[in-house]
Length: 545
Image (cartoon, rainbow, N blue to C red; front, side, top):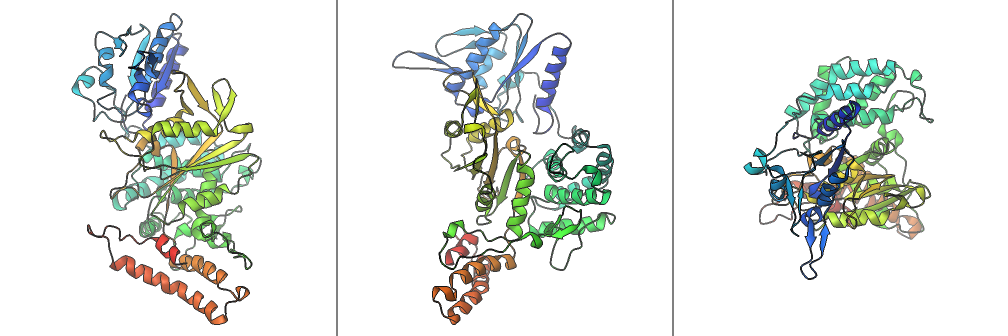
């Protein structure tokens, strides 16, 4: 079963199994990702010195298919990218022999009630020998557009919301999505199903359902309020991956296309992205949500820990919170120095440590699936049976920085991110000490950050992108940059520390001066093959202060 992410491959398999079970032929699936483990962990390994044999995960699951009850069918679903190594090892299984041959000489025939299903997004790396042994079912992304996905979500909402939201999506979602995909450049390529899913998740976070104790009852939300919330979620789903100039073009398109949409009243030099919908359903400028930062006069805070609130980071924190409070994952993308890591850490500092833990680690080009699995296992304790979770019944958020850094192998697969996807999708991974036993991980959610893909920088697999809600962090505006460094400069050079007035005034005037110098340097001194390190980002500006 192959096709791009979000076309319903997994759901089709599960529906078929459930339907077969309901008509009296019990079916169950054992799902594993062959790329999240090494070949020896999959098929088993022979110790050369002692001649001891250790079974692998796949060989253990294969043996177990012989022990199922009579009349029960098992499907082994291998859910991961195909390469010519692991799938060639299954050639003897897929041909008429139907026998798994292991390195220790074991030959295990296929159980009569067992089936093997492969679930990749493409078979670019499969050899003709493999392809000819399989029946192919291709599921196209055009067969499942955004409408059925939206209808499924709307069926969980109240009748009043359903009618209003369906009309809004039907009227304006398609033209905007088509315009963005044909005329503008998103910083990361994602499929249609990602955009609609992100819009639905934002609406779900902004309009909690009836049983949510802190929410205003949905009966109090007027159609105008819902329309404004829809526009807000449209901006931050379809427009979330755009840079500033493309966001301005999207705003112009929205105004030209749909005059009846209740867009925010924009002042000169601003875009609709600078507005949010408040509790009463009114448009409000993000600047009204920004608190002032008090630089202490009697001590000097650690530079890396200073987060001066401005429109950009207050807005991103709100968007992270809207998604994360639903226990879903958020991915921030942006150039160096757009404060992705600092914003996530600032958001996590609001957690109550008695109820919610926060752990952060970085990926590098040397990160392996084993390292990742051991890291996650070190964060959790045993709860019951094979279920593990954070200690003392708490919840935990894990922040993975530079998630796109792991090396991409010769087949074009990023194996470290395959185990990240497996943990997010299946809520666990296979135990490496007891092959075939699945470790369930509960009460854990993910945040991640990465630099824009392209220009020699890796992207992450499309099937992992689908697990995240993705926001692009743009560079702050000139006013925001001046405010940030103005607060730091004026906070340190103040009369309370014994500086004379001339020095204090000069510090305030130096802030826009250094910013202009940095901007001119950035435009004039571009990177060349000989001077490829000429990349002047916000970090270089912050080093001055």
